[in-house]
Image (cartoon, rainbow, N blue to C red; front, side, top):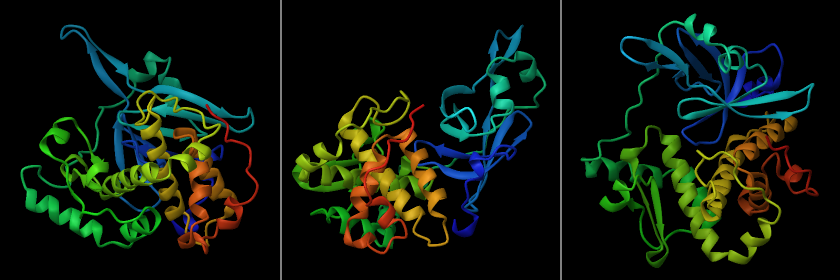
Length: 312
């Protein structure tokens, strides 16, 4: 992110926002409308992603356009209002809703749009190719990111494996098996390396969770539940906690550059917490670990607890 990381997604007059793709932590980017789709251009330079703004409804004889944009909530103040929208498999936070707000009530605006379209998403690897799946996992295990996770949460007794047929049929992206002290992942169900890394952090968070139940209970005091019924961890405290830990790890990794302004980074943390409450509490806890002692936000995070970010 470097010096391009700013609070522009909160600035009136700019067409920017934070996008949480497929349940992952939000990333900043620029917004545009092309045809009947919202296109998000990540500031980190990864490929743009497009989401359709409507779907066809009605009968074949009388088709009609139906908006797929849903208002998830509003946060902030009258002078600094943030809108959170559900798109098709993503959540967008922006201070400049523009056409998205219009689509909530304006059928006429829908009819003025071009063709709806979306970017294609291919799996990281074919589910029938076990060798390729193991290769992807082995590559992940050799990364500095994995080393960081193992330093934080310990190294499982067994190498990272593949989710079995039963778990795969259940749609699981990962599993932590307590009795075996093992983590398994399902790269064939993922479309990006960021999902694979997030899944590893989530499953290792379960390992920490089981080893430090009392500490986790204390850390969780006063944390509100996830309000988004489509977000993983909704009405499930164990999964909610693991997601908060994984979000916290992502935040600390994403803000490790000293070039990022502290206020911008802490506003980003608030955005994480709006999606997965408890992220701030976990980021503060992890910032106390030796591996993050030189993190540019370490002192800010370890100060007296600040007010809980406003929930939408």
